[in-house]
Length: 105
Image (tube, rainbow, N blue to C red; front, side):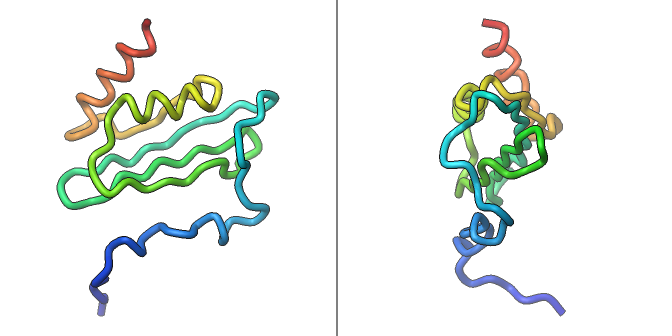
């Protein structure tokens, strides 16, 4: 039997305490990064995870509402224009198109 969370803000918080070695306080120019984004649809959360080339987490963040393509693009730029992987079906489709247009500039 599943349990309902009465306070949704507890989901994915303090994940950095659970990750072995912690997370990098700022990007390391000597590393390459990749970003995974799970976009919110209605009452869901958007989650963005950045991993370095050794598979360690650099950033885990959760947004309480839909995140803009500019926000994902800004995170990518912060991490050396990291490749962004996201589900481009449904709500992700316009975000994908917008990110492609931003990358082409």
